[in-house]
Image (cartoon, rainbow, N blue to C red; front, top):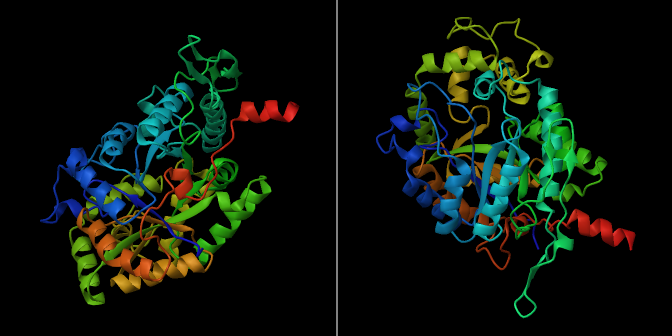
Length: 446
């Protein structure tokens, strides 16, 4: 069988472009409208996407003037979407810095059971002092410490998901035996960051545990991904950078003792689609014309860890920016933005325009054939296993991709025409169901 693209729909209120909410077609209240997300999920399912994804963070994003702010809690929203869809995977972002393993493991196991094995967890360590202050901290923990906590968090979560063997439920009515206590394995974990004693109070879910997704591309992030991740959402501006990241991550995964095919690399792409190239460019320009640049300056200064008022719209970035080593926030996105600005000698105004559509992800304007060509080139030339599709405007951008790009990808044999017999998210991504670590250990001792 021909290698198949993996497509994930990254859904963000009125679209990924920061000015999308200002277009006549957009609903400024879509970010809290369940019907809006149900419609989007069903469109992505019509396009036979593997999954959809909701970003999240434990703080109020943006200032209220800039764009729709705040978001419904993703695990709650995805539970509702699980009842409105049948096939598509449901991936939620949740932080290891500001959650506890027991509660979060229980929530994801519950979503996996309710959805019939379609849950995924986008694991984030959460950068930014704003979030830290919402949890009683004066400043965000150091970058390396956040990843150390995340590693222990994952180890505990995996123990919890495996704390029930698959056949722990006996359901023997005649004997009056509902379950087998010998097949329950309390973690009894004592570590640096967590102390977790008892077994999960939810049985082992259809997938064993949710698909593990990760989005960091720093050195710490890549090390973490090679150890745990099964899909990686990443951002690159050029195919050369994407190929280098892809090869590096696959090599790291192999060095960690894992099958490199068991980690899928999905760069983000913001497709601006028109019936002609000129129409696509005009749509792109319309969005850029609606950017309020004063909002963008403040956001860029925050990303670059600069004091307010340092950046000038019609000047290039200052020469004396902090080094990546000095950045404790989103290291990989910091590097991408600075390298983009330096490489193309962009003014701050031009840089804000470039970031307005996807915050550093590749923005591509063109016809459906040109978008399909770009996707195919990256997919076949060692830069991606699939793509994180980030429509600039919703719902129209997702409609355009499904109605006009998906048929081309199917005609080229790159994308399935229907879902077929595979039902769980892991099966869609070509991944095995993980063995229970306690059962595997007992079998090894026999």
